[in-house]
Image 1 (cartoon, rainbow, N blue to C red):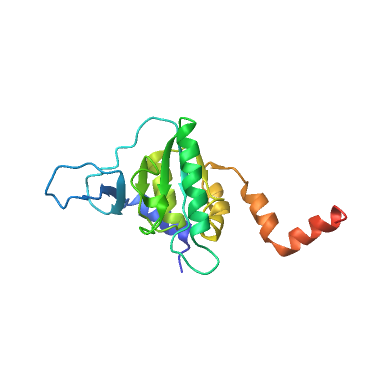
Image 2 (cartoon, rainbow, N blue to C red; image 1 turned 60 degrees about the horizontal axis):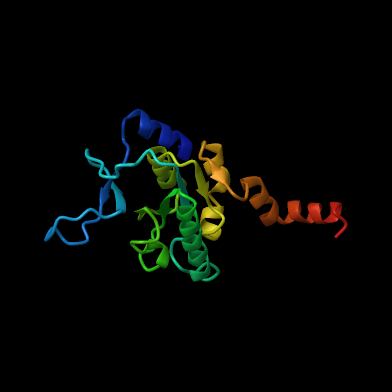
Length: 180
């Protein structure tokens, strides 16, 4: 039983790192350069991160009961507002049937599972000034503390505030202290 952090460290020590390939939306019929990326284990990385100030938004992943389109709507509007403020926007989401994965929503889209391992690899490659977790629903919220603990610059609602709101005992204690 090796834990996730030890396995990640070993993988990195052995040089086993993903690279990112661009989705060829024209099936090689025409030359194209899309902003859609997926990970694989090969030699050449096609991601070509820029030096611009960028912020990463974690989407909600698959639609399911309790987590659906309303979170995708929030992610889309976060990306659009960030772009309007001059940031390059990076969306991470594995659901191709949402608006957040449309070609014009963000500057770059990573079709990747919303797991700590996958998100940390993208953070290391892109080096965003911030990672936003609070708009994607429960899936990215569950990653907040581990992302922060691994050096990812989580911005917006802090991982501690997320935990305070979700941990029933901590929340009850706060409500009692405030006399509510």
